[in-house]
Image (cartoon, rainbow, N blue to C red; front, side):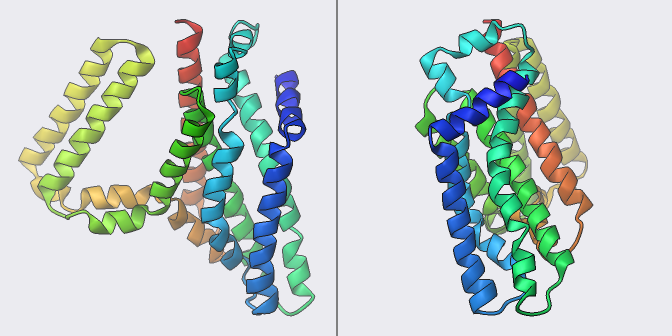
Length: 287
């Protein structure tokens, strides 16, 4: 596991992707830091970090796009798949390598509140909770990118799809406001989601029976619930989409809160996509 981790970290810097990521990330954050905090005098570091989130939705897919796709394209993944190491260790090693690169600019940002304190009074609690939220956002975004990279051999497709997922999640609250709050709309949307989940389970397990059972049980349960109490579906889809927002919990960190549900959201989401990555690789190992 350590050998894979070291190899991945070395590859990010020898291929210059890691250096470019760190340099560009620090340049963008520093630009906003100077404009918002130093020049304009706002004592809240979270404002600068919030402004850079869209930029990082482009940077992180660039960082993660080659994590698995490149090995798959060059067929070097066969060496890993036949090595005496578990799939979990392979995925965790690659994930931790990307987290290491991501954490370099984050660790440098830790000094920014100290710089701000030289020019006035600031809230260290708000500054460092903002950095914590930013780091957690990065952990989840990297896990998403790793999963997408594990299911394709095209780096471009991996980067584009990862960006689209991150951007849709970023816009989740705005999208939720556009969805009608009627019960039948929520029922249909949830039924479609259950069908998609059933297809994903079939793709991962290659068991038509398991996928069919999940689909029938899920949609059947929704139908029964809708017939018994349709009012419970009103506005449900909008609330569900809003709960997937990457920025909702981050904004709580920016305001100085140690958002426990937010920590659970980011960490559990990261674990979920790591698990899916393992399943995607494991599927190829035994095919």
